[in-house]
Image (cartoon, rainbow, N blue to C red; front, side, top):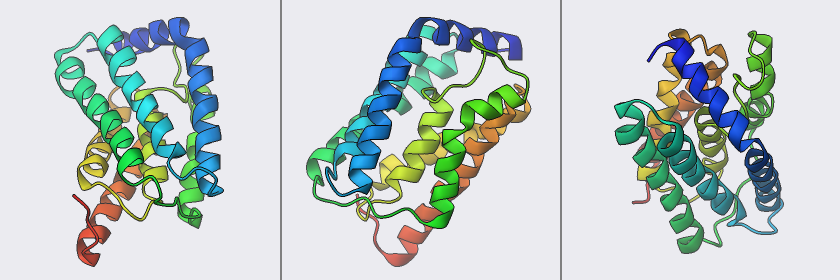
Length: 201
């Protein structure tokens, strides 16, 4: 896939799903706030589960044009979404801890993801929005890392996609360096979990 083909896919997706993206973003923000405020501990997991499922089904199944999108990206996001929903049910009382300084920085980078896209010369619809694979994964890694009980398979899947941020160099999507940073953070969290013996299957 060429860089132009990559941006064409994004343009079609944004044109046809903008309203749904706005709704999903509103749900994500509200749910994560409720979880950070200890009002609904499971809300963030539910919202992230829905967002990941949407990306897997709507973005990659409907707009994917390459085998790697259909046979790698789509199942990765669908499985991640299902695992988020499972975790929300199994560990519904697990609290989302107050974000650390570094997590706040990463959350802020997610918040301005589209602004970076515009700063690098992109315009709507061929630009990165909040409800796209890389921003959703970035947010998923940072938010999920705040829970005490973490599913290692889920965090590993998110981290794997985090390292696809390296494509920012090849497709001129320099804003996805945010994703790459979150990927390294996900790896750091996984390593720390193993070292502390607090990995949950």
